[in-house]
Image (cartoon, rainbow, N blue to C red; front, side, top):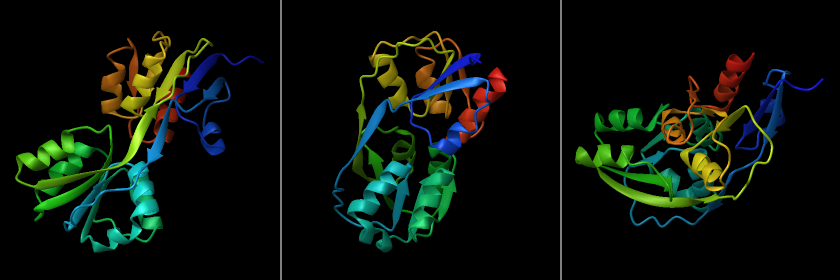
Length: 219
């Protein structure tokens, strides 16, 4: 039986994640961006560090694991980022779902300087908020985000996006903007809304919640 709706994920999904979709949906998944991990250039060692993605954690663990033991406070965004850190033996001081909330939390702590491990494409919300409150920020780029030129030939009813970079990669390849855009968070949704008429946002910033939003809409 032919599936009623065709869904494209701009990120490869695990078998378990694919199993979360309703059986009436046909899923195509492919990575629209790739990540290049790079050696961090850490000039000094403040007492606090910030991670906003699993990619940053993976890169630092690969190249600079020993430096993490020098930090009194490890702050992060996202439960999966926190889990990855804790799985590797590090204690997370505080975690928030969104970067702006983490920045607000740090402002209220006795923190004077932080190291922000990030990618070459990152939002200003955290460093801008911290600097505005007289907290010094050492930004350390630990990975690069690369667009992949993937042209979609099939007609999809919905497209799932997991980062602003994923949206921009999809658009750069001149793909169709008629499908509905399902986004992992408000920042990704804001980027998608520049190109798509119909944009839906998951209740929580996880891949599983985006899948749940797709199921809710079509089933």
